Length: 555
Ligand code: TEU
Ligand code: CA
Picture 1 (cartoon, rainbow, N blue to C red):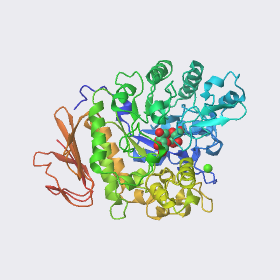
Picture 2 (cartoon, rainbow, N blue to C red; picture 1 turned 180 degrees about the vertical axis):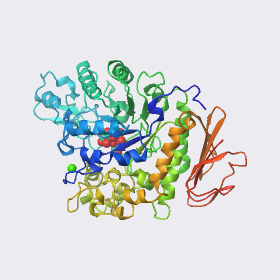
Picture 3 (tube, rainbow, N blue to C red; picture 1 turned 135 degrees about the horizontal axis):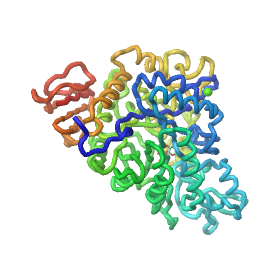
């Protein structure tokens, strides 16, 4: 069995594990996860079998947005440790055969970055043009763009009488990528990290680096995503930096369409390896987009989620490469959102979701704790809001504008707030879940269900979600059809079953997942269907799928 047309690449065969360092493991008793905490848990990741770690930002930062506001790209955040700790982590990971991909946040910096401090100092500054400064229009903002984190995307600077653009918080001013000196500085910094031996970049909001030069009124997304020069800049980045090293590159691409992704992730290798699209996590697709639209609590429905994936699977076949994810540090927990986190169904539905995702075509991403079936938290009241997005949304939608009631927004937070994913990793059943020492206060409250849901319990149970993920990873490493086989959707009319085939040479992989808590009829298999590859129940009953059953065969 050999991959046919599809060129082989290590980043297609790999499984990536995302670490949100602040919430992973605290090694020095300050309640904040750190680099040495990650190093200490490398054997755990090695046991899981992952190939690559994506580290959410570890650079110096005042933490307005937990490290997505960088004040020095060449320094480690004090709370996370030192550059020596980083070098040690990188070397220790490499010894175990695990690669490390860095988060590259280069659409914006912190307002405390030396570049911005200088830019702000005077309209005559050499670095004035490194950011997007504009004069007021009729005494107010230059246009009506709203920041992703609520309120105007422009902040007025009294001293110089101009506004600067910040698509995210006011402490995250956008860089001006149209200035070639800015691009040079970014490429230099990237090269510096590559020369250190890192293995790639996850590029934060990379689809937003080229703004619509008209700065016309309208929804922010429509004017900042997939702008006129974005492909030109990424091709330049490829020539100047990426092509010189053996890297995995994935661009976070809010607002990306399949058409655009065929360029960003083109198989010709001219830009990135793959992008993160948002169709399955952002029902509204992407170009619409007032902030208010994000807040809702409707359960995603199988037909819509499946249709989104099917579109991307077919849309990129042979011409670009997909990434596959259910959740990350910006999304609620997979099992709570797409599965069923009630105690009787949590384990089965988490395994079902994993099956569904990992056997499609693309590179799968696991977000820390997903392999344990960690769940969403519950927001009791505004005193629990920590994430800048939650705090600002509360202020804007509840307090200032009264668009949502307090209760409504809290229910939305329960469903989709980012802090659902950011509660500390649940390592064991000891006080503080093994995340930090007993008696220390963790930076974000631990989910009270850590007594039942934790890594130690999973490791002790051969039937756990952890070992199911381990098996899926092993399968990917041993069956080229999982990496390279073409994708064919099945049962596209079904309201309850997500099914597909993969084809490579004469081999066919058939996967079917029951998305409901009821038994469903399913006639995909007969005596010619081949042998069982994996499933989340023991055995298989002909003609049916039991509640949340996932069943996969290979012939
Ligand atoms: O996210 C950008 C993004 O487009 C969204 O994921 C957004 O944060 C989310 O929809 C808000 O509800 C990236 C990072 O992943 C995120 O953590 C940062 O806050 C953001 O960029 C700014 O750097
Ligand atoms: Ca710490």
